[in-house]
Image 1 (cartoon, rainbow, N blue to C red):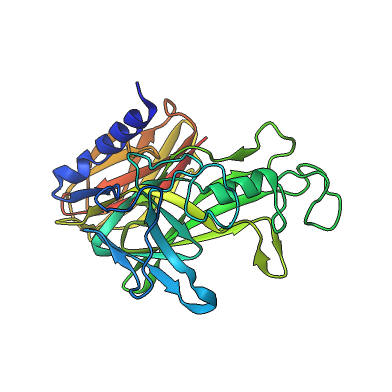
Image 2: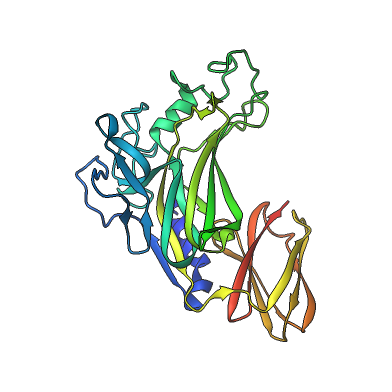
Length: 338
């Protein structure tokens, strides 16, 4: 079965519970836009651009002859060869995840959601510019894993310098940051040796449901390669299939409090303790990072402290999310399976 098709089906199945609860799922693949072939969005007079679900930060700075100053831009660039600053928009896959169009964003970038939503996530990959800099180095950036210490001023052994390129996704609601953040390594050379060195060269899904209900999200990039207070790794990445669930009829848990998941990380079992204000039925759904349901449970609550134990021995190691739903409201909590 086609890998892209499999991931998309897993994502859609993972959203079934939300659809049944009355929420509306929107997957934006940006193919509704129109550009000349192998080009990108450019607007020298108007900041920001919109889709049906969100407003994407954008700014064209007119100083120094004009340049892309901030935010993100939709594009259909297919250039996987040019790894210089003259190719800011192209990504290393040469296309979008599900079509010709995708978005390239720089650090930092904001997306404002038009309705309170849960951001299910999006597919992500490296730009050609960043990928080439990480793999080959350039006059500004050190090649990751470079044992000669290029760009560092000294010779550094492989593994002694933990190279990495990280995206952090932060959520906001009513102008305030939510408790959790989502982190995804676009490149990871932290383990000693070279066997596990990793630079993303395909599309991978980033699950953002742990952020909960938000009205905006913020992208920030960071890297192990820095000098004089500035990041040397090109601060760009590409994303596609931006997916949100509007919270129609769904609110954060009102009758459940003092939620705790333990142990976390977990091995054979994970327990969820909480306090309920009244007697009702609580449903729990465990999903993996693609949004696929892997476990269901249900319990009749009593007013006061409650405890439910979930068997997790059959689950593969990785990150999972527990959704608690009492019929009127819901909440998602992240845990790690060893």
